[in-house]
Image (cartoon, rainbow, N blue to C red; front, top):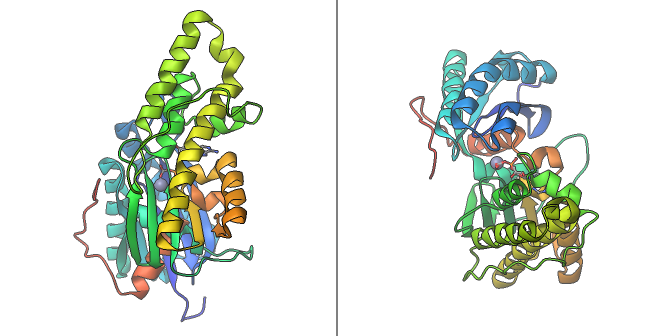
Length: 339
Ligand code: KG4
Ligand code: ZN
């Protein structure tokens, strides 16, 4: 390791993934994720179980990240951890671990906003050569817990343009999947079943929300009513119509997201667009955003899937920028469930 390299250890524990990553000068050396399978049986994340699983996983996950990076903990320059938003008990595990480690190493630490880290996923580098967005750009962050349109002026200067007023996009996918009896998290399954379905077979109400905010709860209720009505006349309705139901739900969600993304680009006069967060793995969103980019003349940036869903490489990337800006956290920093 050169003495001028910046070695960042990132730690993520905001929801149901315990993750640790090592970045050297912004380049990934390791990116370890332990996903918590325990929630599957409950149809959603159970906070108490998440905290317990983080406690069990954090030490081995960090050890594995250091081992895969081929470094000892003494060469870490800064410890970055997710301060929030997220489940308070889950965040507490990562925060306490990061604090103890930074203190024992005598190194600084930085407190990362998980949502800003999702945006900074665009800047993570690895062996694959990828273009990164120049500033300013507009990012659509679509995850299980959040849906935001953000004007990104620099790595640390972001302005919220709009966000969901109720459910997040991933939550809408997951709740729709639950209505169809699919296991949690249902987003990827909806995507899979939708591939052979007709996306215009079932119409759902288009959310009417002013400005650049979004709303998905009305769509979810309409979808639940549609499915219940179908079952009343045909008990095999879901089994028979599954691909069409998935494709229709997915299409309405993608339409709503892309409509607002396009509006954000137009009103801000910006044609550099990023999409990140777990839902950016959705195949319809990816292909339709790519088609829209061609029509509108956008430069479109979609990070690789492993940096889109919750991961610690993005936390380390945010930590890299915060450290360079000398924005360190005190050892008494506490997690924050909501900003
Ligand atoms: O970013 P993420 O890993 O975690 C949060 O910060 O919330 O996002 C997880 C969300 C889940 O709701 C999951 O169902 C959704 O992303 N997701 C998808 C797909 N892959 C993951 N939704 C639709 N289609 C997908 N292919
Ligand atoms: Zn996330």
